[in-house]
Image (cartoon, rainbow, N blue to C red):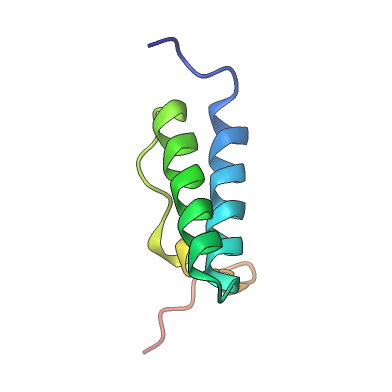
Length: 70
């Protein structure tokens, strides 16, 4: 297997596909977006995109410092 030309771009596209999958209510399209995302991640040689992104949620804006929530 050849190394990916641009693994970061492939991971970003995979995350976008996962977001689309989370936003659609049509099962066939959800499965196709998920399959495409998995293939991109595999080709990029990257672990699966974070579960947070696969649910179509944006990370909270944490400003300049960490928020620990306690």
